[in-house]
Length: 77
Image (cartoon, rainbow, N blue to C red; front, side, top):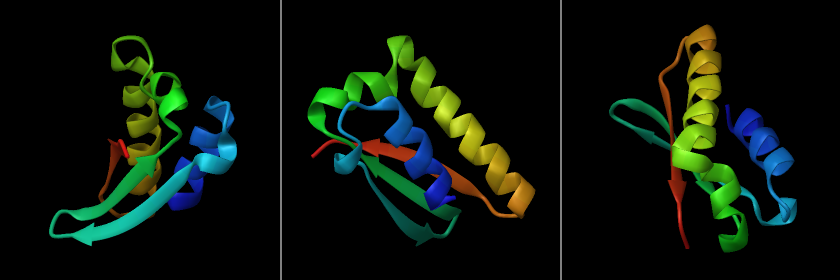
């Protein structure tokens, strides 16, 4: 899941080297925290949150296929 999220985020942003994904295992499953360059935050979130919703949908579908529960959180630094 981590690799998929990194790939999706790197393809969207202008500063792909600044993309960081951390995995946190919690009681509900896998939590993926995505951190990008502040200038790229708008590209990852998208107009009205559409891009962020699409990223979460793709990661969730891949997680279901793998038999795990995963959630994506976009964090600011």
